[in-house]
Image (cartoon, rainbow, N blue to C red; front, side):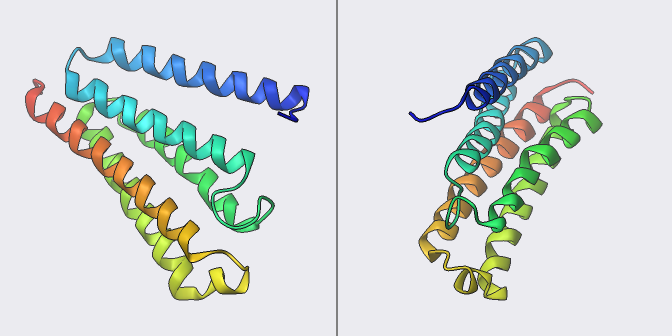
Length: 151
């Protein structure tokens, strides 16, 4: 790989954040649905940032449309903080991420931005499908954990 020292540092910080998030989530609950929801959401956020930073998720690496996708992990972190990592709040956060992912994907099609920026339709469809599925799965797992947890 043709990475600079800064690239390795950023990747190391990303891995540390992922592992730290997994350790925190493990301590928050022993519920398997909660833990699987956390794993799904954290991995989705990690992959989104990594792939987007490395090559871009849609179109060319330098496409400004890729900046949209850096907002998702930030929104997830904000939702996690506001919900105090409670399963019902995390379920709502992941549901909002799912809706946002579908909205961004549909918006790119409906506005014609993908044709103006020479972005392959396949890239937008695949990115939307993969991450919407991950957010939806995490939301369902957190909702299951919320139903089983005491209030």
